[in-house]
Image (cartoon, rainbow, N blue to C red; front, top):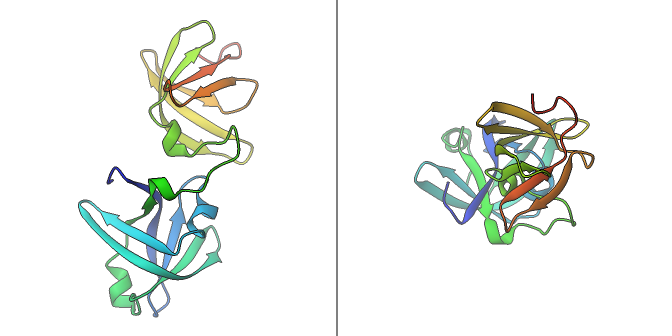
Length: 169
């Protein structure tokens, strides 16, 4: 992924015969996609930019119509491509909310200073997100709830937790 872009979803397939695309948004980014009037489609080193004509709900996905993508044959070539936006154009989030890409790679430590590992992935679950963390002791799943996650410091690149008994075993 190009450094100045953030992937916000992936094109699952085309929708209909008029070039609409079924886009599956990544965790927490469903609303973000609708704020942009231009999207970038990325696959490997290829980047193509398109104006957005419309976005509508399509079940768990979003149906996106891009300008100049007017036929199924044109839309089909974008299957599997990522949908991205410029990192510096993302809407600001309320305090204590973060984009998944901001958390990925952060070091998780306990309040006692024990390094648990790095966040490899964020799983969105109905009740709360779960951080999948890999460290010296293997993989640990950390519920992203205020009783456990005590501090997120993006500048220092760390997440401080107060693990419940048995969480790190």
